[in-house]
Image 1 (cartoon, rainbow, N blue to C red):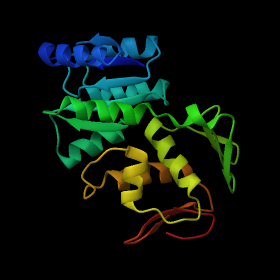
Image 2 (cartoon, rainbow, N blue to C red):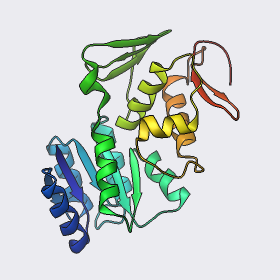
Image 3 (cartoon, rainbow, N blue to C red):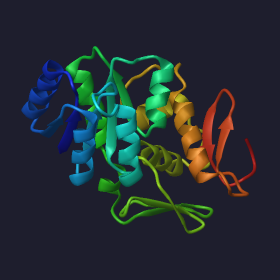
Image 4 (tube, one colour):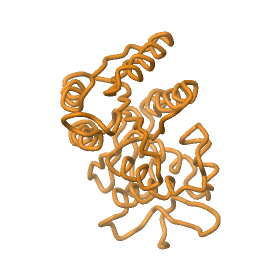
Amino acid sequence: MKILLVEDEPKVASFIKKGLEEQTYEVDQAYDGNFGLRLALQNEYDLIILDIILPNMNGLEVCREIRRHKSSVSILMLTALGTTDDKITGLDAGADDYLTKPFEFKELLARIRALSRRVGETGGGEKIVLSDLEMDLGSKTVTRSGKVISLTAREFTLLYYLLRNKGRVVSRVDITENVWETSFDTGSNVIDVYINFLRKKIDKGFPTKLIHTLVGMGYVLKEEEGA
């Protein structure tokens, strides 16, 4: 697994790089946003660990630029900015996960393992279809009525889980355990944020809505009118 680490604090960067390499990960390193963006666009990475407060270009700008060119690479925000609003801002910029400092290294490893479990790696050439929505696990593409829909790695995994359980109500706990594969504050609105991301991409502009909310119960992917 090849990782890009963009972190401007030398001691923190050295600690993370050394720990990841001891776990047999291949790690490239950048100390500022401009160089980190250049590496991200010039090379192929399985995961990008990205600080927000960086010289020259902040991590949010870097994340948005990466997403303009590469929708499938996993991005983990690693930062001291830990309020709910900060997390939502990071996710809205295109990050797949968000880990705040200080952190335990074993938690970082758990997040990396979760992000590395790419749905397409085990899906072969399988296609999952609901109405005019189609997910191709082989090419990791999603279309609706023939229109290609660009998703981040986390959005893809969430949609995959909903499609696998189409017609069945899944709770927030179900989503946390099966999509994030790690623990976080289920009282936060991170899941709601991602469901809204998917709604904007999957349902907006189409007469039939596929993603529905059942208040107090969870979410369901089905072909019928609803909230």
